Image (tube, rainbow, N blue to C red):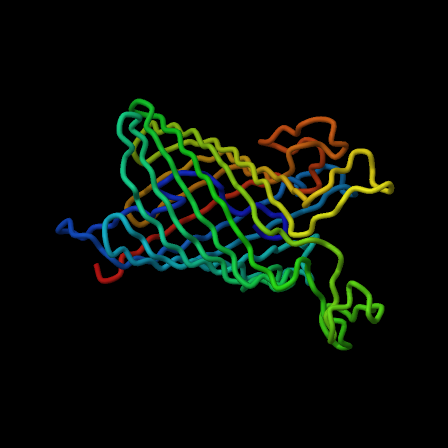
Length: 330
C-alpha cells in the first residue's frame, strides 16, 4: 500500500497468495527457478469527488519482483521486493511524488496437502520482513516474522472458499517511533527536554506514539470460477494489532477508556476479477477498501466494501494489475 493508496488486491487464493503455481517445461518436468514481476496501478475514490474544494486526487503505481526456488513440488523459497510511487501529492509522504521501497520479504511456503474427510487443501508459510522501508526505519523495526496458514475448499465445479490466517510478531529497538534531533537532520530538528522520558540519549527522541508488537490477520474469500482461466472473488479481512506499551486506567482516564496494551483494528475488503492468459501472463482488476471497522463516532459499523463516509480520504481505490511469471532455465 502506498501512503493510504490501495495497490492491488488482498485476495486469499491459496495458489496466488501463499504458494506460487508449479511451472513445467515442455517435457512436463518441474522448473525449479522462477521470477515473478507485477505491475500495479490504482486510483483513489477521492479523485472523482465532484466538489473541487473537497476533491483529493490520488493516483499511483507499484512494481514488485519475486524470485523463487522450488526444490520440491511442495516447497517454495522466495524473496519479494516492491516499490510504490504516488503520482499525485501524497497526504502522508515526506516529499511529493516520493518513490517508496517497502519492506523486503524472505519467504518459505509449503503445501501440506489435503485434509481427509473435509477435503480441504492446506498450506503454510514463514515470512521474514526486513526493515528496508522508511516507515519501518522510523519505527525502529529490527525484524518482523509471520506465520501463515491457508485453507481452501472447492464447492462444486465453479466455486471455492479460502481462508488466510497470519500471526506476525515485530521486533523493534524502541517501543515507539524515533526521530533524530540533530541539526541538519531530515525531517527538521526536534527539540526535546534533557532527561525527559522522550530523551533517548544522544540525538534520538521518542515521538510519543506506540509501535505494533504483534497482530492477527484473518481473511475469508469466496470465488466464482466460471472458466478455468477466469475468476471473480469477494474477500474480507480483519486485522487486530496490539502495541507494546501497557497503560493503567486512572482518575483522569475517559470512562470509555480501557487499561492494558493498545489495540488497533483495521479491515480490508476486495471485489476482484482475474484472468489468466497462459502460464506467464495474468491480469486482475477490482475495488479495494482499507479502513477501520467502525465509524468515526464509534457508534456504527462501516460498510466494508466501499467508503461512503469520507470519499476524500481515499479509503477505497480502483486497481488494475498485470503479473508476469518467467521460468529460468526453461
